[in-house]
Image (cartoon, rainbow, N blue to C red; front, side, top):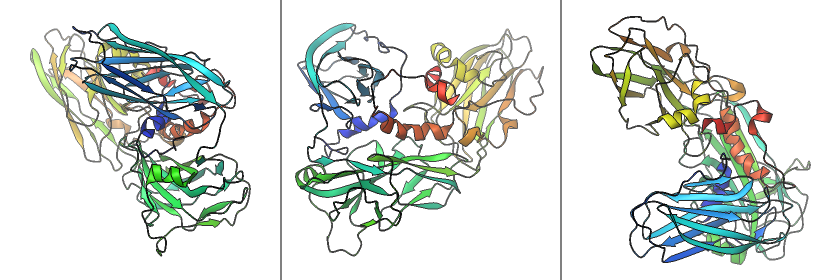
Length: 538
């Protein structure tokens, strides 16, 4: 059995389960077209042993090799013959899963002679035990170049050197000023007798999703028996490792010293800047050495953090994972956009967008690789868009007509535009940062009626609070020869009411709630929250 933090690094795919996004039906990837369709010389699918019903996700991998270097993308599709809401997949790089259906598709855009796919697979609590058949299909070009079948087994939970029968409490901090720190020390307790061969207890403190810019916090664990998370690439945080522990089920423990979490000075607010979490588990010596190696600290050091009996012995309701929420006080950013006057036939104009601060317009993705902000525009009546120049800034890209249609509900929410002639997305702006957007427009047929350009965000803060401190400069006019300049006044933009706090916290809660008590059909996320359905933004 692999631990939740396998030294081989394959858990990066399993932990991607936090970011799973329900897609609208199977078939998001059409098999790509290509001139040649060579069959792979080797295909190795590893589902990492039996799936434990209600257990931790398994890190699945697929290796596909070709004798000659391919010239295009390859697609894999894996379908497990199991009822919906039983066996399920977590999203990996280039993958789409279709929860609650046990089906996943993954694509590598630029295939090579050696190609590796990674994703998570798991079985929900209550999944009937036994073997389930699967079919793996690989496409190169528009042609199926490989297919194979096999079985994956679902088994009862069993001890394999990793003990996870703990309860650890959720923790929340509100009213935290940007730039300040909070001391974090959750209580936890073992829920059953520890196996006799356990060697080390491990507590992981996470700060969030590495590389997504969504955390807004950093933590520190300056003790010799704590180490940064270097075993996988998805999550930042620290492991603290304890060789001395008591076998006392139901007793609440805590750390001898708290872990400090510091909020970024430019973090916006009020916002849940930390959808962070904890994970508690224990290992026997063989598993510990496999996943962490030899003990790397002096056991006689004075700089060690310990486990101690908590003063509060109230029962802890939870399991081996828990969430940490840190909400900031008010600290707005200020998105701005300037208009332009278009003169001549085919004209190139520069439209600046910026952030006047004081906070960062932080990257708050609803799902992995999703943008956080967008620019939308309506050209003057009769004008034609020729092009929007690419901008070298984080996450910037402009949407084609199909993408605008896919995101229309989100892009039109609260807009003062009658139509959307162009839309571009980006991931954030630091205080004082600006982007020069270069538009080329043909105004030969313009009637003189002005257009409009707006900058907006895909989310709000805690309790729907607008994080933009000044809406009066979020929209501006696009005029022709200075005619028909509308009175923009205060912007009427109403930002999309998807709470960013719920977004990031939900990512952590997702791992907890995926251990479903009974298999059940998926529900619409908009039904309970009152927020727009995330699928409508894709």
